[in-house]
Image 1: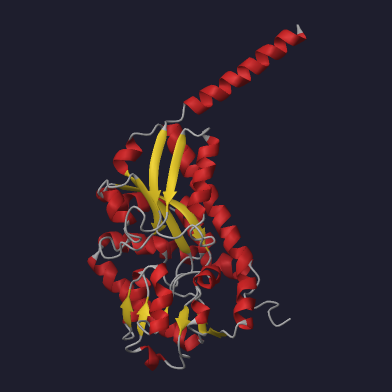
Image 2: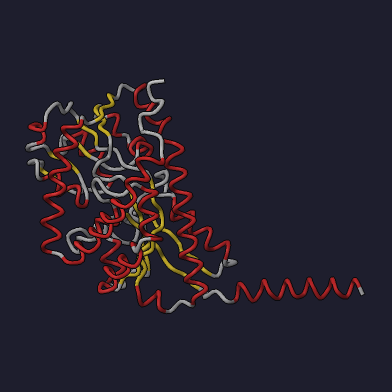
Length: 353
């Protein structure tokens, strides 16, 4: 009897497992990325999420990632997914700033939500619903799939001692942060990460912002620019998304959709943990290599904040969706502020020790 019951139990388990895998759609998507997979916490998240999805589906759902430029231009995720040229793509949200300005708020909002606050807003205060609403007219279903710590404010070939020095400065920036920097007379351009080292080295750029210290180190900026400015006021969180063509998404059953979305949620936790784990050691290495670390003084940050208010007001007055998302973000930031102030130790606590 025991043997019979055990055989039934094993057979039931095997049948259940088979049915579980069979319930997933058989998916084979090519997923071009906006960042090289070698860039820690920025470019290696989607490959890890793809592996999770394949492992959990028994290989039925495969999202094959491709390096920047292999299938589409490095900054072309939104356009190519929207047009159906590729079923899905992975990138920082905001490179489509010229076509869909509200996207930049989801990629990073200057003086806005930090990474853990952004996750709270997205999952519990209506952010994800607003995201889907903004992208639906463009035939794109976006999924938050990798949030990481603040960027640095940027690398400069010369020390910046006054706001007057920003005028005419040739600087690489993306999204709404770039428009704010232009308020100070900076000549702002958008270049992909792979082109920035040479642009700095040859003087095509006087400075650049790109990503976390870890990523900036991998790209070698410290070799051609020795002045590193923080904090990343323009990008207090850095958010990547899996862009999915809505026609392709509609073909999936609920179990497959849940698999992809939950794997991306796990990717957020993994990316943020990795980002926070590595930056302190990188800053020490920068100092050992002769990089001068600078923290913007309060008067400079105040000037950037005032410029941010002007740009946000201008954009909100001409773009109802931009205004709707920004208002929601600010409302949550205001609600959360007292807890953030009282619930956590001050940022400078123990630093001098």
